[in-house]
Image (cartoon, rainbow, N blue to C red; front, side, top):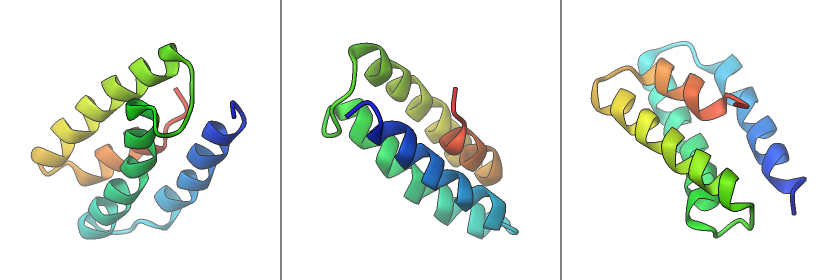
Length: 81
C-alpha cells in the first residue's frame, strides 16, 4: 500500500502541467485534493505520519482555494513534500 500513495500523487502532477487558467487550476486542484482527502481520512491506508501531513496540506490547499489562489492550491495539491 505504501506504493499506492506516491502513484496517486505522481498521477496528480500531470494536472499541474495542463493547467493554464485560474479556472483550470481550480478544477484540477479540487480533483487532486480528493486523493489527499482519502489519505487524510484513512480511506487509503497509510502511516499515521502520512495522514497527518495530508491533513496539514488540506488546510493549506483550502486556505488558498478560499483566497482565490487556485494555481497555488494546485501546486500544493501535487507537491511531493
